[in-house]
Length: 93
Image (cartoon, rainbow, N blue to C red; front, side, top):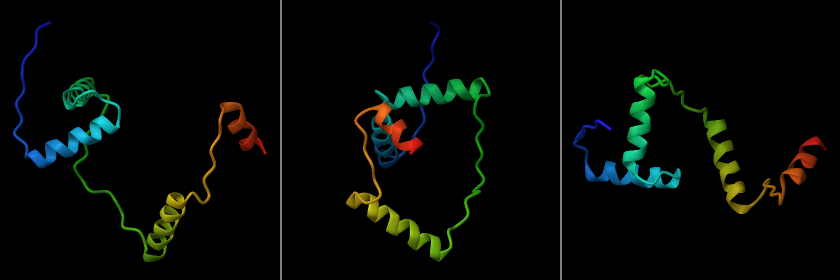
């Protein structure tokens, strides 16, 4: 395999945050994430958009989502299932 090394200077804080998210996402290393990203970019399977297209929530919806998040943390409006069959039965009901 003909390989090369790419060095990208980043702050330790950024690196540590990225490593943590990569591990939480199931990757063994940050290098794996970067390798996958570069492979998909080279194959034109992803596009990079640097424009901020997000829209702020209205104050009403902001409050609503904060309340929903708190409810989820308390276990309200949350269901758990021990099997796929049990989940499907609940969805059909």
